[in-house]
Image (cartoon, rainbow, N blue to C red; front, top):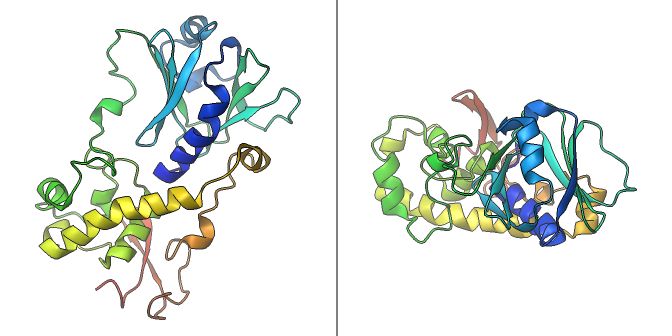
Length: 274
């Protein structure tokens, strides 16, 4: 599933390409991807509207329209968003196309069909998408060790599981929780209530630092993004633990270990992460 750095990349690549353009026509082959309102209501309300800008909230993308309505998108496991010229080859499993007034097509494809759209119209309360349940962004000025310890410091759950809780801090998933905990030298299975104040400080400092690092490594041009079909992120060579089970730790040389925590795979260094 794309996490905060990947969603930020999509926003940075696609946002400038669609800003100020008007949605002239919608082709929808899978009505079930529209979670709210009905597919027919969605298409009728969105057609003819102009896009003001594209933003991100946690792992959500938000298309802000000039009439102050919002199209909210969650890519889930395999969703992909492309801004493509009309003659660009169509990806398999393309479920919706927004045709814009300069000829660009905003295409949504999704192999597993878990991705969802919500249209929240001007003045409507969003009780549908789940955005309202999200808490701080990692880059929020209020995010610090005190905040983390207050929210998580009494929990008995593994700290890895706690970092995935979007109601505490948004945007972190399986990949970057492993990377963050490795950099903070905290074993992912540690109960959150066992962390020391120093460990909370290291963790709070490492979260925005690590995510910012991967946002930068993911930097890509619109042409490269389109050639890579929206999946060619640049972070893979820079991952230190995720996907490297059995390989030597780049810090100490010990073999990296895989375990399962809360049903999710996790990789760590048994020597560096005591």
